[in-house]
Image 1 (cartoon, rainbow, N blue to C red):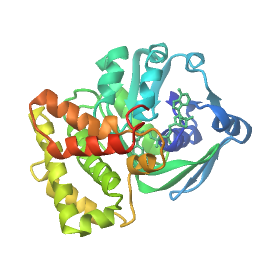
Image 2 (spheres, rainbow, N blue to C red):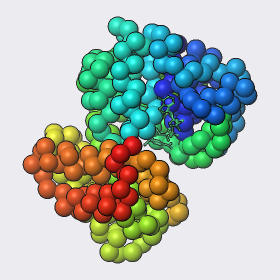
Image 3 (tube, rainbow, N blue to C red):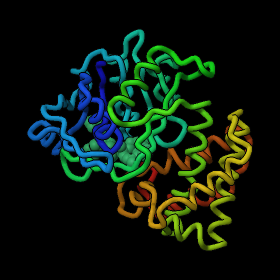
Length: 311
Ligand SMILES: NC(=O)c1ccc[n+]([C@@H]2O[C@H](COP(=O)([O-])OP(=O)(O)OC[C@H]3O[C@@H](n4cnc5c(N)ncnc54)[C@H](OP(=O)(O)O)[C@@H]3O)[C@@H](O)[C@H]2O)c1
């Protein structure tokens, strides 16, 4: 399969690396010292599921040089997506699948504006992976799953390209579960990650601290209920006990866990605040739902971190 991995970070480097190591024809988009290191030494992946190196990885900083592919794995941060959109159509033929992996729920729509809904496979990555050093990706934990589906699909009737890609991901050593409803899965992940990220950043707290203090635990649940209300107002079929189920998931996580949003804000880096808390506020407004807790979190975090929404 010909695959373009746009963004060779935690997500692109890990899942793209597995696909390349399995023999697929993968071109990685990277830049700067990371690009040079991959060119010189290959893409090195240290993984709790087994280390590997993609020797002679094909890598470029020029999307236009890649040409048409079977699959595009879009693995840049949400605030980096806009800059790539105009170069996407050159990669897309009549049956090309463009898989989004960004946290939040807006990336599929953004991508569809340039390639059409029929090209987009909304997706979700469940993993903890990051760039350890130039040319070196570390996969530290999580299920290492890549879930995706057609924009709208009948249950039990996956398209041929979805089946092919799931088989390729699975054969490469990652997992690719079949979702019942990809939009419900996207919102379910949003319902976990955005309240955890926003409150963790505002209170400078780990997940262990958030869940064990009764006052912050109540805020976490309230924030989840706000996301649930927005999703339901938009016709998303979340499971009835989604908040209770997500709180049980919170209780299962390692106590020291934090989100990338919190780490990026605290370290003064561009962040995904706009696509996380910002999106909850924006989509709530569109849907006539009030989300006072998210409005407050957005206000606190943007005034405390003035560059947070700039990207
Ligand atoms: N990492 C995880 O464990 C994880 C888990 C679940 C979901 N996600 C989501 O997955 C998405 C990707 O996250 P990530 O952690 O993989 O990000 P990341 O590690 O920062 O990787 C993104 C990579 O793309 C590169 N890039 C961006 N624009 C580029 C361009 N125009 N040309 C060349 N390279 C470019 C970045 O380079 P520069 O550094 O030079 O900008 C960086 O190396 C996010 O939405 C995140 O929320 C991540």
